[in-house]
Length: 320
Image (cartoon, rainbow, N blue to C red):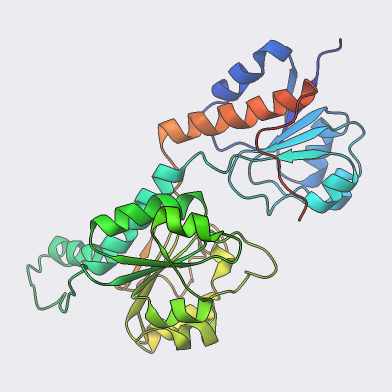
């Protein structure tokens, strides 16, 4: 049997050792693209048996030029950078790793929420500037008894819910795809999207990015939210209409926002989200821990190896 060819389009990892270890029994030829442009990817992947991808775009036109690709493994949770419909038409299996960083992202979301609630970033900024002043950061509200609304009830928000409850937050959620059994198991109150907007003191986004969810939190949605409510986003930046968010912050309708993801990454230097005392920004690091990246590489590569070996993947992606 010929050695399989596995093309790596891009990587953010210190090394690919965990993935290579999971693939070692196949003795593959590994090819790494020199860039994320379509021509760079095709140079190494046109005759590859499998592709490993992180952030590179795999559009339909590119996929149609692959001569024998059987499987694409996505190093990550979402697959909005892959044309999954075209992949399915071509008989290419797409896999991902939906459960690799549940602890990290739910921890990060909770940390951002706490940072907003207690104005940690602003307090640190003032003290670092020599201002030891309580009046500059008041008012602060007791967290216990406030309402956290979760948009989406997948693996990560399910991990977040008990952490939020430990701080005394009442947790509600909207997810049209989650069953009542899931809500019951999480002991989370199921509500409509409109009700979630109206009742939540904090809203944490955990929805996938699809045409239906792009700009989900827009000007009309912000208008229906409580005065002073705050938003946490560790999911996908384009879920939020950023100009509308900035407007709601400037008018004082929203109390704050904590964002690990933004519509354009890296964040443009002239972004109106910068320089605001009620906005916390982190550079898309919610997913990260040493352990999470090792788990991600291992699970992704193992699923690719399963498909190349004629077995079904553990984490297949449905065509979108």
